[in-house]
Length: 324
Image (cartoon, rainbow, N blue to C red; front, side, top):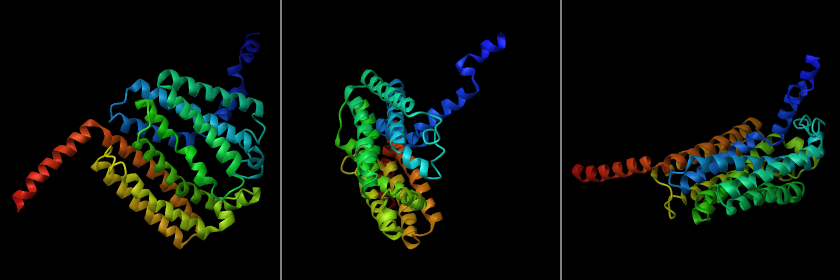
């Protein structure tokens, strides 16, 4: 009797842990991590490095829920092509481990949680922006562009650029020019981040008829476009330093050093566009680039960092004339 009673407890059932993992996989947690990093960076810059821990954690939790909802809906919509592609056919939906109605309820619950957390814990603007991110990702990218245009990543990149707007709005209750520059940074970074990945799995996309740029325009054109967008990153990232002056010298140095490495790799890709290992290298570095750039924003925004740089500048200015 005792054994039977224990067996009837749902969370002790052998399949319960696997079901939890399956729902977790629907949210695409690796993508969520990048969204949260950009959200956090925006909050640190907006608050000059003094964001409150409660607001910070609430916004990140809401951001994770919103991104998880969007990614789950994307999995529902793409379950047909996911079943065909070898690398995705074992996902929870195409494999049948999770039913469509279950994933739909899960996605709606996550979206509601995100909205309520932001509306009650931050402000209505940030909550509406989070919902707009879901709408753009599903309506513009997943439904409209992904299966119809080679520019799907370029235009659809707007969805991935909304998290820093959410973070900025959560702190300030408005969207300044600096917030839109953060949006632009993610928007411009998305093509050189995703196109190398598309070059690596071009055969999968061709198999299911998704018109990613490598499939339609070829590897050389994709590599050249990757280089162009990477080149645009430097002037866009430095707009935070001048004319907006919301980031300082430390951030500028980090942005320049990271960009130099990024553009070097992008140039190498143009020389060997059919080299999948080179494409993989660019893709992996694009992730590291964004993580370190956001970390640079965060550290640069801290009050003690500003004080150190300000003090160092005064010492340098006093030291240079003494040399002369």
